[in-house]
Image 1: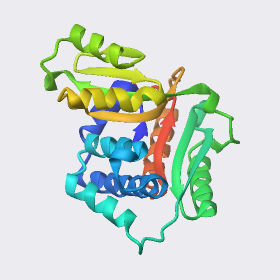
Image 2: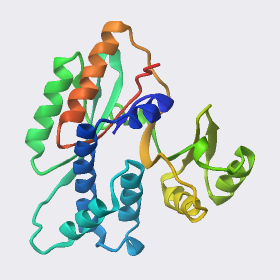
Image 3: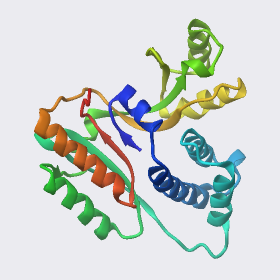
Image 4: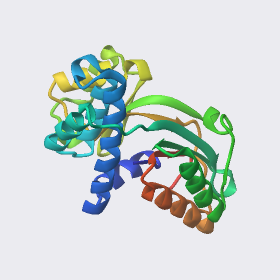
Length: 242
């Protein structure tokens, strides 16, 4: 669930192992919990929960798991409390890194994040130190082979529905929206029966940085070790892995 280079990220998501998928489902369950506690268990009246459910489906989380997580979050006996904290810092050679977490112990999480960055040539920064290098965007990715709608027709339809941008790769379409328009565009596509590989609001780098072999090795370890932390939900960075 990290913010790798665009098309690489999509390919990587399709190749997750069962163990990785299980860890992702656990983290998505935590997002469901926070969304339910903020806005209630009914997706019809809780746009944040609707967006999390879309993200769950894009990660192939079974409907039974989603429904079970919602019921658990809504239960009277659920006293778990998580706060959302975003850490900003740097990887090797000044690569910008943003780490979104949900934690019930901010001291533990800050210590774990700082340790990983320090160990592999990075460092933790202050709030605002790198966020200015990213734009918050809704991103929806569709596999070309999954839809019979032509490229031109799909582009016209999503732009009319409120999308900002429409990009094309050999295998994928990528639709970009403002955060405010994300839900409307995603729900429009769902209404048309169009499935997607990815649908979430993310931090998109304004520019990417290349690294030499050693820097890339260290940055890869930073991403891997951060993803292993239970408290880490998303990792956004401007490292160009290609």
